[in-house]
Every structure is written in C-alpha cells, then in structure tokens.
Image (tube, rainbow, N blue to C red):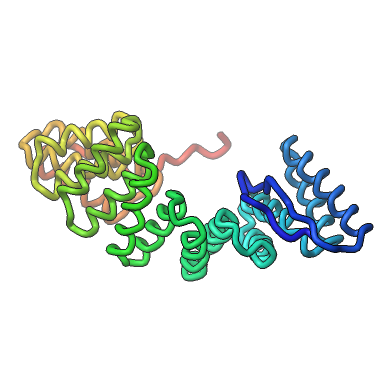
Length: 298
C-alpha cells in the first residue's frame, strides 16, 4: 500500500514509502501512476488524469497519486475534485505540510474559507517557518476581518522570505487596514524596492499617502501606477481627485476622462455618472460612457 510522500512540489511527490499490498494491484497502480506523470510532463493533462484515476482505482491508498490528481484538478479549476483528491491524500499522508497547504488553497478557491483556514493551520503546525503558508493564512484572516491575526501571519511570511515583494505588499495592505499607516508605507516602499514594476504596489502606497493628505507624495505614486497599467481605472479615479485638490484641473479632467473611457463598456453607472459630474463641475467635457453600438450587418 502506498503510504506516504516526503514533500509535494508542483503537485508531485518526490518520494514514496511502500507498505504491504496485493502485489498485482500495487504493480498496476505504480505503472499507471508513472504513465500519468509522463503524460503530465508532456502537457497532456486530461490523459494524465485518466491514468492517475485508474491508479487510485487500482490502489485507493496511493497517496502520491491522489496528491498529483489534486494538483491537476486544481490546474483545471475543478476545485471540488481537487478538494476531494487532496482530502484523500492527507488522510493517507497525514504529516506533509505542502499537501495540507494545497488542500487549504483548494478549499479557499472552492469558497470553503473556514475549512481553508483549518487546513492551513495544520500545514503551519507541521512547517512553522514556511512563508507561503503564513502568507495564505494572513490573506484569509484579513478577508475574514481578523486584521490582527492577518498581521501576525503576514509579518512571519515577510520575515521568512524578506526578498518576496508580494509578501511585503500583502503586509502593507493589512497594516493599512489596521490604520498603521507609517508601517504600511515602509513595507510598500520595500515591495517597490524589490519589484518596482507592479502597478498595485504603487497604487497601495498612493492610497496611504492620500489618507495622510500628502498630495505631493500621493500624486507621483498614482502616476506611476497608471504608467505601469494604463487601464487602471481605480488609480485614475483617485488621481483625478488628487489633481483637483492640488488645483490642477486640466490634469484632473484628463485623469477622470481616462477613467470614463476605461469603464465605458459598462455603460452609465453611479460611479461614472459621479465622475462625469465632477468633470463638468471644473469646466471639462466628459467622454461618453455609453458603449458604441455597431451598425447592423457589420
């Protein structure tokens, strides 16, 4: 019987321990598993799934095969099947932190947030210095409204992976939600120092400066965000208000009209109507927010 794997990397176990099983079933399962992994390596994921499903049918306690199936189902965004496969894998391989982490994130994507938190907590207990586990727990806790708990885990993620910009950015968002604005600025700046080409990092930093009413710092941060992502509607929305507060009405009109152009496919919405009114109020002409209708027959 296939009993355990040492670690799950990229959804595939690297080692397997064999216990007593019916020789024919074990041999069939092993052969099917190897065929499935070979097909996966070739990018033939559907065919790989067929082989791996046959492997676990031949040997239901084949933890490595269940783990690999979970990974393939997750790639196909079939999260219900991914959850089932990872549950079976963790029932067999009870002390593999990466498996529990994968199960936790499958739960999360299946909108089973409480189950996700429990699985990730188990993963954290098994591997307390794994930054990705702390990061995922932190994001879940933040979305649940547990800001203090989120910060605790996100700080650990940033500590164990000090060169990961994503972890720094996520920590900054949690600090911002906790009104620790100076701390948020420091970690957003760190994220930008690590990877300055992410529009979200500049936007998140700009939001903190806006809350602190530091226009001279907020404006260039927003400008950098829209330079990196020209379709960043939310950044143009805020930037227009920053320009208006700074008495740069021409720039405010331009920023808001960019916003209106980006959201025009949605037609008139309360927000677009509000911004169109802002443009008119400072002497500008708002662009249309109605989607263009194509002539019939073309």
